[in-house]
Amino acid sequence: MGALGDVKPLAPKQRESALKKDTTDPLNQRARREAATAQTYRELNPLGGEFVEPVDPNDPIEFKRDGVQNGVYRNLRLGKYSVEARLDLHHHTVDMARSALYQFVRDCIEADVRCALVTHGKGEGRKTPAMLKSCVNAWLPQLAEVLAFHSAQKQHGGLGATYVLLRKSEGKRQQNLEQHQRRSKP
Image (cartoon, rainbow, N blue to C red; front, side):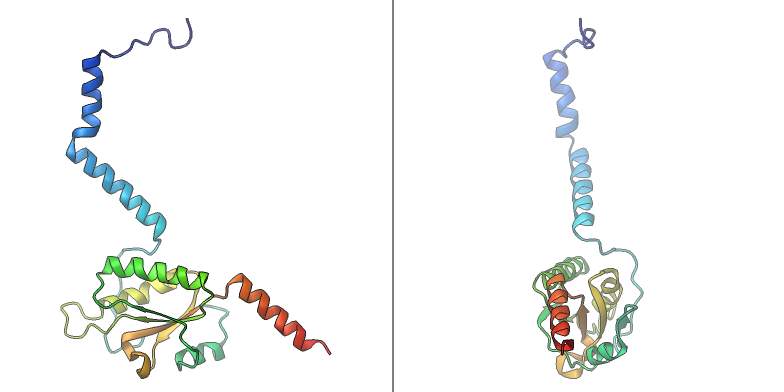
């Protein structure tokens, strides 16, 4: 006999009860489903859901990664770059906003968008003011594609919106390099 010589098949009744334990227990099903959903969500959306430091509704939010030139950041802050894509987070829950922002940044990178505008509102007069603004302030620096962001100018939503400067795609970077090489040749 082979290595499985001592193994005896389960009687039909034993097979049924073994299967029923795993598949019919609603608590077990729910726990497995929630664990799988949570794992999938973490894989698809790396933005943390942990505590977010609250921001005052009337305070600007800002961030600049090392290596971003001061002039580039100043132009972003002053709204001098054309806004190529917009995301409005009004009427979103925190979870919906987290997913929408993450997907929006991914879509912008795929579409070679360099400057985007995220409208989150100030949340004044709410039980927890500036909740989405605080979340956007915490989430954007977690995304490597985000080089800088700053609260928008009045004409673009003021303190209830944020300009986002995104990393160049590889194609745009190559195109820019070729353009500068052509200019420098005599």
